[in-house]
Amino acid sequence: MDIPEVDLAHRRTMMGTGAQGWVSSPSMFGSVGARSWSVLTGSLAPDMNMALIHSADPELLVEPLTQLAQRACPSLLMLAGAGKSLADQLPASFLAVGSMPIMAADLSSTPRASDPRVRRAGREDEATVTDLLAEAYGFDREVAALATAPLLAEGSTVTSIWLLEVGGEAVSTVTTIRVEDSVSVWCMGTPQRFGRRGYGKAILASVLDTAREDGAVLGLLGATPAGLPLYEATGWQTQETWDLFTDATSAQFSLNLRPEQRT
Picture 1 (tube, rainbow, N blue to C red):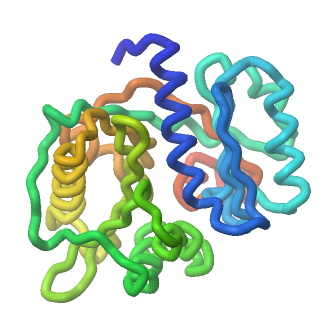
Picture 2 (cartoon, rainbow, N blue to C red; picture 1 turned 45 degrees about the horizontal axis):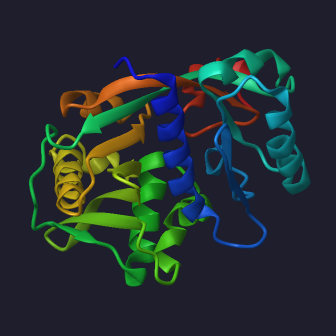
Picture 3 (tube, rainbow, N blue to C red; picture 1 turned 135 degrees about the horizontal axis):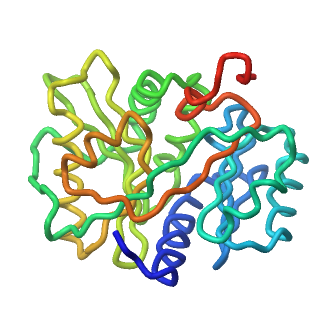
């Protein structure tokens, strides 16, 4: 997709704004601006400590690196647009783990179908969603619980976590976040034992149908290697890539490292 830089910058900011919902305690750190954003939970898994920089200004590295040092936690640093020029200014502990496709979809043209098996999760589903994410992503349960934290937030109308249930058993989950006229898709997980049955496609189509009915027109997401084939098959298009760097082993992206590089 040939998207003007000004529009890409706005879409990055919308994704960062939505991600602030995972900053659920005073010990965590979140910030979002026109050129960068951060969500640092303090987890020992880098996947739950993310910072994006999309400007060539090296000063934008100072705040996230300082906050990470204070929390002594690993992270996933992401560089986009002009920010990719900062790669050689990252600390030596950060290794490149490839690029993440950032995809967009016009919700008027993606598959959408309401599915009675899909429902919005509530506080009482926190353990179920946590278990699904832990199994699907290979996270420790404590890490997966951080991704589930928006379920416990009072009065949140921006973030929704969804479940697809078959025969009374939850088999797939996804999180959607509404910002302006966009809905971003996060934490989509179907454990391998439930794979190849169309559950991921079904839950995605259902939540996008709901989002469009609520007035969203644009879908946004960052595609993991596991999710990319599904998104490509359902009308999502890559609008850019974010270069990824981590100083620990990422459950999602460190497969790109040689064994001797993994920590």
